[in-house]
Image (cartoon, rainbow, N blue to C red; front, side, top):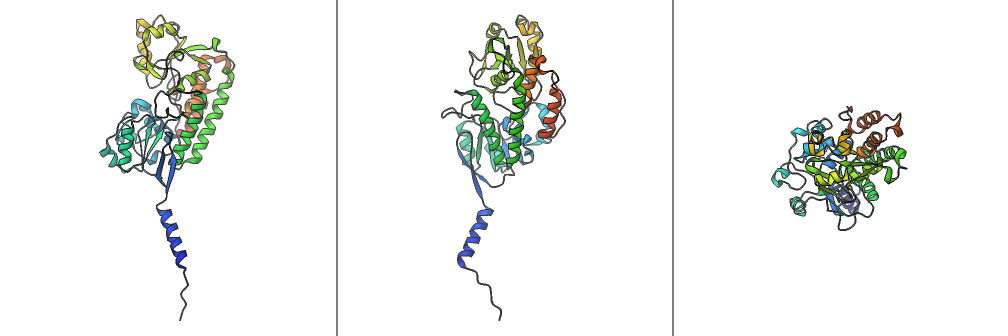
Length: 353
C-alpha cells in the first residue's frame, strides 16, 4: 500500500493565496495630481487622452499597448506624428483633453486611461465610476493647489519642470512596464541638454536675443510655461514673460511694443509664418524687417509642457540659430538623427530650418 505524501492544510492555503495573488495582482501608483491609482499588474490596453503622454509612450516603445487616442492628436502633434506610430489613424478616438464619450471608451475595454492634469474632475470621475483607472500627467512638480491647473503659479520654474518631467516619464514607464526605457530616456535627455546649454549659459540678460513665440491668433507663452525655459536655456529672453502668465492671447499692440528681434513659430503651425510675413501690421517689428521669423523643427517642441526631445535637441537648435558662432562644428542634424533612431525608431528628415 503506497503512502500518499502529506500536505499540510496551512501550506495548501498559503499556496492558494499566493497563486491567487499572483493571478490577480494589483499595484498602486501615485499620479501627478497626487492621486493613488490601483492598476492591473500588466497593462496591455491603454487609452491616451493627452498628447504629451502619447508622444512619451511612443518614445518608450509602448505604442502597441495603445487602443485609443485623443481626437485632436493630429492638431496637437502634427500629422507627421503618424510616421512614429503607424496605424494611429485607424485607432478609435473616444475623447479629448477635456471630454470623454464614456460609451465609446467602454467599448475599448481599457485597463487604464491617461489624461491631462487639467482634465475636468467630472470627466475623471465619470471614467472612474465606470471602473477604469485614470492616471493624470502634468510633467510638473507642483505645489498643493496648483496641480490641476493649466497655468500654475510656481516658486521655481526650473525645478518644477525638470523634476516634473522626470517624475512623469518614470510614472508612465511604471504604468506600462517600461521602467528601464524611462530611465534611459531621462538620462539621455538631461545629459544632452547640459552639453547643449553650456556655450550660452554665461550670456547676461541684457545681452540676450529678445524673442517671441507666435502661435495662431496672437496666442503666446509667458511665464510659468516650459517655453520660457527653452528660450532661457538657449540664451534668449522671452519678451512676453514679464507681463504674461501662462498660455494667453495677446494684442498686436503688445507685440509691437515688445518689438522682438526674433520670432519663432512651432512646426505644427507653419501657416503662422506666412501670416506674419504678409501682414502689413507686422512689418515694423524688428524680427520681420530683418527676416528672422523662423519655423522650428519638429523636435523643438516649444510647448507649455516639456518634452525630452525639446530639452535634448530643441534647445540646442534654438541656441545655434541665435548664436551660430558659439556652436561651430556642432552637428544638430546628426544629433537629431541619432535621437530619432534611438527613441522613435525612424529616420529623421529635416523639415524646418
